[in-house]
Length: 198
Image 1 (cartoon, rainbow, N blue to C red):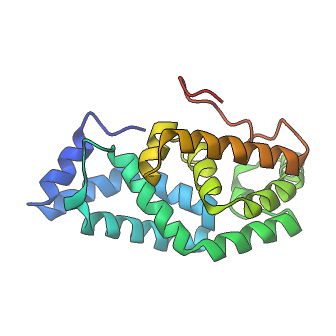
Image 2 (image 1 turned 90 degrees about the vertical axis):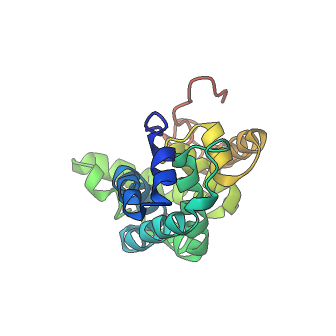
């Protein structure tokens, strides 16, 4: 999902005079932000963090620079900062998943008992490894894998150079491969964006 032909930036600009126009931006992007935050922090925190993300975006919309970043990476950057405020909760959830192997967020995504058992077995070492990543490496990896952002969009969202995104993603993948002892872990070998070398 990309900014809709410049429409998102135009909505932000228009909302400076007509604040109610910002609601269209919320309607367009809130489901994806909510899904990403749910994966990071769980259902309990997702509603609050998503609301905080859009409230912050609304408050600082006059500082949005369409020349520097698209709206989507800008929103994910705000969400990443809000997630950072909830970091202890995220680490606690990952450690719980590492201990129990039960992921309540992914539960509805697996239909058969066999799939659920296989996913839970793979989730334990992966969750433990995610919990041990630095916050910067975890943000980059999960924005790439769960939010489907490109390297450039991640760089814009986190306000870091693209080279830093590449090195953090490479380091995170290496640590996850080592921790899970399986090069074929889906998160580790997540899709590669066209033009983005692994």
